[in-house]
Image (cartoon, rainbow, N blue to C red):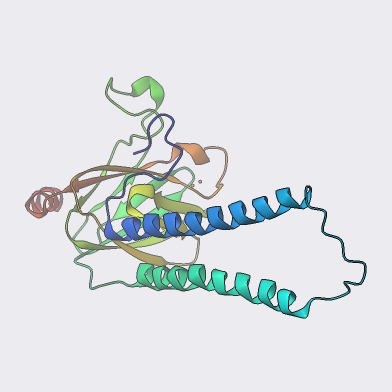
Length: 228
Ligand code: CUA
C-alpha cells in the first residue's frame, strides 16, 4: 500500500504491474531525453548570432525533424500495445470473483462456489482498531489464493464505479448494465489495498477494497468454512 510521501508507483505484487512499472520508466526516460534536448536547443537560441538574409526554406532539415519524432514515438507505441494486449490476456483462471459497485460499498460473489457473497464496507474512523488503516480498511475482506490466475468480473448497480488495486495493476470500471473482465496473479501473500476511482458521488472516497492474499490451502479452508 501507499505510505507517507510516496508519490511514485507502489511496489508491484503481480507480474503485470511489474511490466507496467518497466513501461513507465521506459517512457519517462524517453521523455527526459526529449525535454533535455529541446530545452538545450531553446536555451541556446537566445545566445547565438546566426543570421542568413537569404534563408527561405530548408527541406532536408524539415524532413529530418518531422520523421525523427515519429520514429521516437514508435519506441513508445509498440511496447505500449504489447502491454495493452498482455493485460487483456485471461490465461485460464482458477478462481473467478465478481465485484459489484454500489453507492457506496462493494459487494462480492464467488460464483464458482455455492452461496458465497457478501458486502464490504469501509470501517469508519471512530470504529477503527489501533492498527487499522483509516479510510482504507473494510469490514469484510476479499480472500484470494496467491500464485494463481484470478479473473475478476466488475459491474455496478447504480452509477459508474472503478475497482482499482494499484499494487496489482488492476483498474476496471464497474458500469451498470455491463460486465467487465480482467485478471491478475498475486506473487506474494499479504494485504493489497485499493480504492474506487470513478467519481461516483458524495462518498466516493469511502469505498475501499482490501484483498487478503493467502496460500492456496488457506483459501480452500476459508471457502469450505463459508460455503455452509
Ligand atoms: Cu465508487 Cu467512486
